[in-house]
Every structure is written in structure tokens, then in C-alpha cells.
Length: 360
Image 1 (cartoon, rainbow, N blue to C red):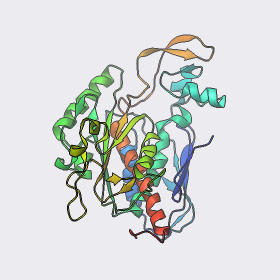
Image 2 (cartoon, rainbow, N blue to C red):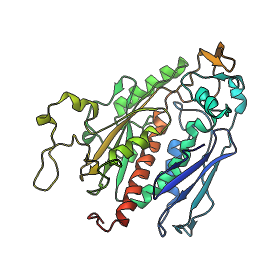
Image 3 (tube, rainbow, N blue to C red):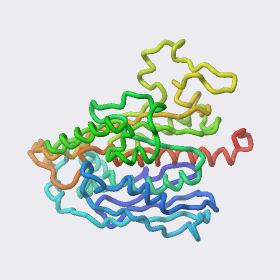
Image 4 (cartoon, rainbow, N blue to C red):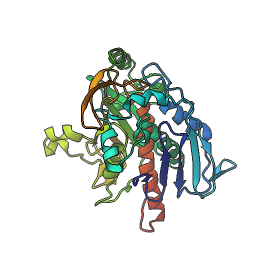
């Protein structure tokens, strides 16, 4: 299986399945001498882990990371950073009835057709549990580019949305973490939680949107042709399980404006009066806030009887059991932040290597 490595200079290669013994990874290319705060890494893992509230999966994993190499006396050594996270609360028997059937909108069918075999326990490698490794690497990346601030929040669940621009919200880790759904608007948060609980009680699932804001990005990050900053961010976000869409800046709404209304006019300082560009022009950061939105579909595992296809080509009726998220959004917030950090740390390292760079 190819495609288990992300990054160019700062690379993360991950391994493991949802119901295997463990998941883990190797981070290659991490600079030496970086002070690593283990509490910050565990904090990000705790934000992603299941069992943290009544509106997410009840799988009770502590998700404690064990580092095997690359960190000595609290600092990176420049050698590969190896880490592992053991699966402690597996209930593989919940998936026995799926051994010979393909769940609708899951990767069961495509995996088996491509590889001739699949791990049906929780989706195996295709499970969102794989993202735990991204969070470890992303948390380390954030500590390398610590002057750049990355913050994400749930901006919509179903048809319930925050109808304010991000500049008018109290965007802080504290305000976001106060909400089980990770929405910084307390009134909207309550409506979102009620909606998820209603959906869950009906055995169904629901999707939504996460908004991410990246500030203090130096001017000049990104490349102007194939490696545009926004294209790399888009690739990173679209690699996350259940993501169906990515837009940055004005996004699709920008198509409703004329050029005269959409253009970001300059101040003499080089800043712009508006920021429809989303902090990126020509694939290169311009010093304004980078902001984008990531759309997540409803989780495919629902607690209702559905028609499935079996491995003999017959349509059968089956019902999924087990522990699944009625909405993936609350746990996906740190994943979005981590993938953004992995993109930015890679560009940051490239800028350090370029003798022509004016942003060192």
C-alpha cells in the first residue's frame, strides 16, 4: 500500500489499524534542538480521542503516546522520531456481521477490490483512528513554528451555523474547548449539541463545517505554480477521513461578487483593506490571515438497517452495531489544525534552505 507518507522535508509516515495492536509513526526531517512539550502533544490527543463526551464515540481510549526515538532530555535530536499508541479498548466482535458485506459509503468495497483483502474490524486502515498519528506529528510541527497561530472551530452542524465572521468571535482555545462540540458561540453551541443528540437518538449521523484561521504567517510562504500554498492545504484537508470539500478565502461565495467588489485593495503598509484572498495570492502568503473551511460528510456508520452489498454480489439487509460518532466534527478540530501545521512546517523548512528567501 502506497500513500502512507505526508510531507517533503518534514515527513510523517504512519502505520496501524483501528483494531490492530497499535498505531504509530515515524517523523523524519525534524530539526534538532527543538524543545518538545509533551503536555501539549497529549492535550491535542485528548481533544481528538473518543469517549470525551456524550456526542462522540463511546470507545474509551486514553490515547497515550509513547516516544521511542528522536527526543532526548526534552529536545529533538535530529534523528527520526518514532512513536506508538496502543489500542486498549477494542471490540472487534462488533464487526463480525460485516465480514462479508460492504457498508454503504464506506471504503469496504473499494479496499477489497483493490487489494483482494481487507480488515473489516472498524474499517482497518481506512478508519479515522489513523488520524491520531497526524495529531502527534502536527502537535510537534506547531511547536516548531510556534510564532504562527493555528486555531479551528466548528462553524456549522447540519443547517445550524455561526452567522458571524471569525473576527467577531472570541477565538481562543479556552472559549472553543468550553463547548463539547468545539463551537465558540455558546448559543449556537447549545443548538448544535441538541441537534447531534436528536440525530443520535434516531440512530443517524450528521455532518458540518470546520473553519480554520492561521495568523502571523510570514509573507512569501508557498510556491507559485504546482506547489501553491492553498493547493497543499487543500490536499492536506482532503486527505482527512469524511472530508468532502475545501474552500479558502471567499471560496464559492466569491463567485457572486464582481471583480471591483472582490479585489483586496492595499493600504500603504502592504496590508489589504479586505481579505477575500484568504491570505494567499498567487499561491504565496501575503501576510494577512489565512482562513479556510473544511466540509465533513455525515458519518457513514449509522445505527439503522440498510441495504448492503455482500461479497457474492447479493443485496442484503444489515444493521451496523458498535461505537461510532454521530458527528465527527468535534473530534476533527485538532486534526484540521495538525494537517495545517504539517503543511506550514514543511514550507518553513524550505524557506530556511533557500538562499534567495527574503523571509528568513
